[in-house]
Structures are given as structure tokens and as C-alpha cells.
Image (cartoon, rainbow, N blue to C red; front, side):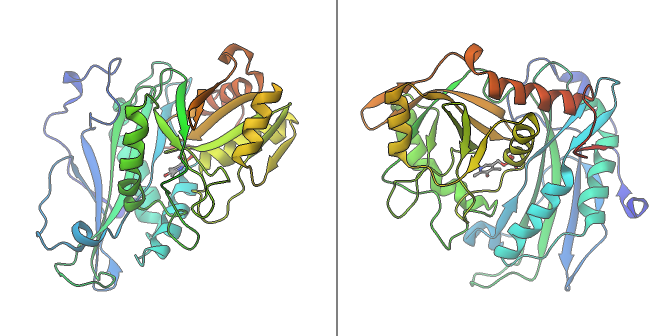
Amino acid sequence: MSNSIRVEKVKKSRLPEVDLENIEFGRIFSDHMLEAEYRGGKWQPARIVPFGNFSLSPATTALHYGQEIFEGLKAYKNKDGKPVLFRPKDNWQRMNRSAKRMCMPGIPEEIFMDGLKKLLSLDQDWIPTTEGSSLYIRPFMIATDEYVGIKPADNYKFMTFTCPVGPYYPEPIKVYIEEKYSRAAPGGVGSAKAAGNYAASLYPARLAQEKGYRQLVWTDAKEHRYIEESGTMNIFFVINGKVVTPELEGTILKGITRDSVLTLLKDEGYPVEERKITVSEICQAYEDGTLEDVFGTGTAATLAHIKAIGYRDRDMELPPVSERKISSKVLKRLYDIKLGSELNKFNWIIHV
Ligand SMILES: *Cc1c(COP(=O)(O)O)cnc(C)c1O
């Protein structure tokens, strides 16, 4: 099917102007992008064109009512220098679940997956190879009706572009437990990767950043008693040798990195629990000296160690990363799988 994707190549690559060893996250874009339109009740053939601006009517519905979803995944060069994708089908499936919740059409596999592989084979030289670097991939879909009224649109645009990136959090981060604002409420769109979720999180996150924290830890919208997730990451705690992470209940984004980490933890034989976790349980574990590790998981950061958790007016400091054996082991295995030095036994690696 990918033969049906028309390609218009750039006249001259911008790659020679880019220093792949020194890149700011998300500001450098590779040469090409994939695009497809949904019109008249069906997807039109996808195209690959030079990365660039496109024009929209000021009345485009996505700009007014937020009918917009996105994904994030990464490509790596493995130890043989071949481009590989990490679990891209899971992103495709999640995007279609988000689409359903937002009344948007599902994207056919030929457009999402074959388009992605073709885009990657064209721009594979943009994949950085320094440790901790990768090619970040951003598929997204917007409603494109020209209409100032509220209803699910009839027209959509799906696109995928890529950016070479370095590490998202080069150092362990400080997070703050939020007890006033909420990211997602029961019955809302917290489990969809919808653009509006992020818009709603910016203000409370900024208040925490002004106090010196990098990210928030969201708690449940009803009682602010249970831990949900942190910024763009799912969250894990190691308490007395046992790994716990909040269970998925519709307000938490079902992270693919979360699932990969759970799979690897179980594979290593560590005790793992997916369940409700109260803020007071975390404070108690800290008091008892049994809070051994806290880390976030997400595509952008992979696995980010948390240095301290702010709660009300104090900070719970966590042990140095060198003592965090479980998460460090899992992080290493994730890299080994991505780079091909560990076998692809979970079928997570797709060759381009
Ligand atoms: C994307 C995202 C994550 C992480 O999901 P991955 O599939 O691991 O990248 C976690 N939380 C939120 C709110 C997200 O948008």
C-alpha cells in the first residue's frame, strides 16, 4: 500500500546546517512530513512533502473548539545503524481510541504505519546517534471544517512530522503534588491524547514552576487524595522493594512506556502492583524510610528519575540515582532493546 503514497522530495536537505549533537528538544524539524485529508466521508491518499507551513481558514474548527489529537513516538538507529521504531502500532491504536472519544475518524493503518515507515526511510539520516538522542515523531489530527458552530467536523487533516531530539530531562527532576487544580476528571478526556488536556494544565504547572518544580503530580479531581500521573509521564513508586503505579481508570493516559516498564519489571521478577495510591501512603513511606524510588515514564523522557516530591510546604528528598537499582535496570533494558543489543522478544521493535 505504501506505493500509493506520493513523495515530493526537498530540493536541498537542511541536514548539513544542523548540529545533531546539540539540539534543543522539539525545535528542529526534519526535511519531510506526511499528510492526508479526510473528505466526503473517506481518507484521501497520503502524501509526503517537504516540511513547511500550510494555510487554514480563520474559521477552522480545530482552532476554536479543540477537536485535535496527537501522538508521540520515537525512532532510533540500532547498533547496526539501521532505523527502528519502538512500538509504533500501539501509538496508531491509541490514536484511533483518542479519535473515537473526540468524534474524529480513525486513521487507516496504511496511512499511519506505511506513511510513517516511508517518511522514516526518507529522513533516516536525521536520527541522531549520540546516547540519549533519538528522532521524536509527532503524528496529529485536526478538524478542518470552515464553520463557526459546534458539531463534529466533516473534514480532517492528519499529519506526521519528526524532530531530532536529545534527552528530555538530562537531570533528575523535582515534582509537586497538586491538590487544587485537576488535569482530568472522571468521564472527561484524560485517557485521550487530546491537545486541550495540555492547555488546561499549563496554568497550574506554571505556578509550580515559579516555586522551583519542573512538573506537577496530578491527584484525582474529586478528593485530591489519589496520585494519578505527572505532566507528560505516568508515575511509579518503589516502596520497600515493591513497585506500585496507579491503575488506569479513565483519567490517566495509558502510556506505552508505562506498559513497557510494567512488562520488563514482571519479566525481571520484581513484585509489581497497579492500584490506587494515596498521597498519605507516599508521605508515610517517606517517613518510614521505605520510599526507595520515584520515577516517571513517557516517550519523550523514557524514564525520568524524580529527585524530590514537593507536598504542601515541604520536599520529600529521594535517594541518589546510583541507589535506584530497579528503575536503572529497566531503563538499561529498554535501551538495549531499542538499540538491538537485547533480542526483540516482546516484538516492540519494528524495522523501517
Ligand atoms: C503521552 C502521555 C504519557 C506517556 O505516554 P507514552 O505512550 O509512554 O509516551 C503520559 N501522560 C500523558 C498525559 C501523556 O499525554
